[in-house]
Length: 388
Image (cartoon, rainbow, N blue to C red; front, side, top):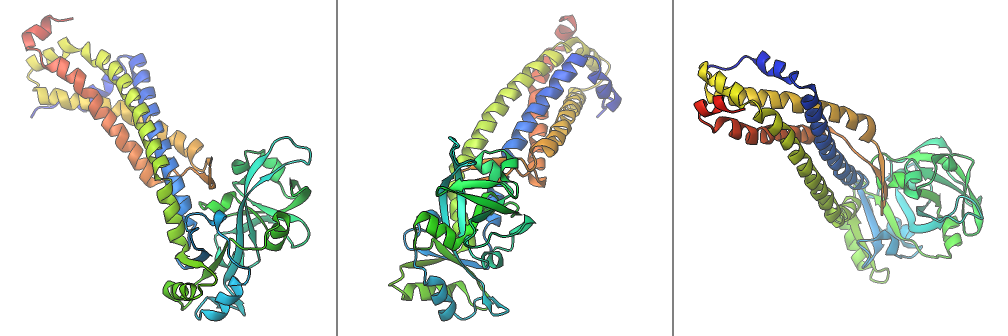
C-alpha cells in the first residue's frame, strides 16, 4: 500500500496554529483529568494498603471490626497476650506489643480560637515505634508522658485544614482546656498514620476520661495469626477479635470503594465532555479538507493511506497534549495531600497512572479522528472535488 510521507502529517500541524493550540489544550485537559482521577484512587488505595503490616495482628473489641474508634478492650490485654502467646516478636527483652487508643478529637490552635479542627489522635507508648516501623521522626523528639506533649504527622496540617506553620515544633494545640506542646514531627509515607497526632497513651486517657484501650497491635515472630486467634477466642471474658492489620485496612479500602467509583465516573463524564469538544475542533479542521483528500485519491493514494495520515496527525497533536499533561501532573499533582475521613493521603502519580493517562490520550486521538474521516471519505471523488 502506497502511504503518504510522515512529513506530510507533520507539516499539516502548522497549517492552522489556532487549531493546533485548541487540540493540544483539549488533549491536556482530558489526559490531566484522567491522571488526576487515577492519582486520587491510587493514593487512597496505597495509603490503606501500606498502613497494614503483613506481620502485625490487631486485637480489638468484638463487634468493632470495621472501626477502631468504636472498639474498647481492657487495659490488661497487652500483658495477657504477651504472657500467653508464644512466638510474639521480641527484641532485647521487649515484646512487640503496642497498646493504643484511637480517637477523633476537636482541637484548637489557640485557647480562645473559635475554629474547631477535627483531628485523628492516637494514644501510644514507646512500643508503637516497634510495631509501626513506617513511622520515622524527622524533627524534634517523641512526646514525654505527663508533660502535655504531642507529635504530629507530615499530613496532619492537611487533615486539620490548618496552616502548616501552626504545627511546627514548639507550637501548641489546645484540647482538654490546656495547651499541648508539639515536640516532634514524624512521617509515615503513604499510610493513614501520616495524618495523625500521637499523644502518650496515659495522658490521652486522662484527658478523655477513658480507662480502656481501642486495640493492641502486636508483631508476629514464630507465632501465627491462628495462635493469636485461638487465644482470643478462648478468653471469652475479654470479648476480643484477632485480625491481621492488613486485613483491617483492606476492609476499609472496600468501604471506600463507592467513593473511588464516583471519582472515576466523574472523571469519565468530564473527559467525555472534553472529548466532544475535541471532536468539534477536529471535525471542523479535517472536515474542511474534503477537496484535498479527494485530490490525493486522484493522485493514486488509497483511502487506507489517508486514514493512516489522519491518524498520524491526530496522534501527534494528542501526544503533545498528553506529554504536557503528564509533566503538569508530575509537577503539581504527585504528592498533593487530600483530606478524607480517615485522615489524609497524598495523590500518587505512578507508572500505572501515567500509562492510563497515555492510554486515554491514545483513545482520544483515535476516536476523535473517526467522524471527520467518515465525512471526508464517504463522498465520491468527483463530488468531493466539487465541494468547498
